[in-house]
Image 1 (cartoon, helix red, strand yellow):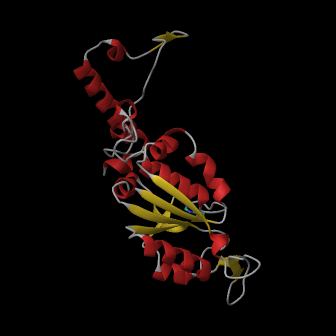
Image 2 (cartoon, rainbow, N blue to C red):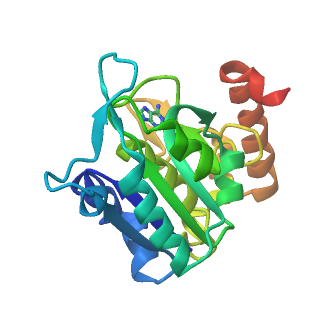
Image 3 (cartoon, rainbow, N blue to C red):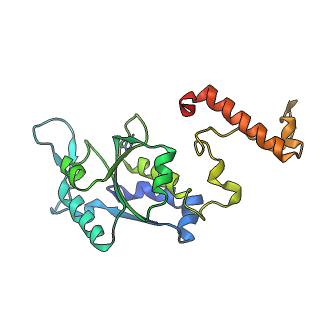
Length: 224
Ligand code: ADE
């Protein structure tokens, strides 16, 4: 998979992609992540990428020209499955969207800033708009990092068996069951006996039961 991220703050994205699972996925050649600094595509000598909004009002708007130049350039180089705009008024990200996006070949992710992008970008280039929740971030970069992390870990070969995404919360519309590790007793607080019984059928049943119990209690909406 290839991911092209369009941003005015590439340095904000570097850290999440240079450690742990996201780094390994790139080293293994499973995913190719490219940052594009939008300022490099500015058409004026001050390297501006934003301007005042027509009609007046506070806040700057990201201009269509640099975004269009960059997206057209990328589209000339390859076909894209989705051109995604990170915005608080997009579809709220969930595991279903992550699963679907983890199987595509090429995506562009556009990070918004200020008051957002000129609406014509959304009308003519964007194929999907994604929000990571009902709150407003200073820019789309952190949201893009969240989106990419949640997609990349699902691509076959990225996680090994031990960290398999199949047992994650939400993967079967259930929250994950509680987990424990050594010591089996701490301060008199004991690990549920079934987990140390060695009876794997019973352990599986217990985990499923606890997953349902936890989902009923915390996220009954997932069971509907
Ligand atoms: N940009 C600013 N806030 C955001 C959010 N909640 N989700 C996605 N992009 C954003």
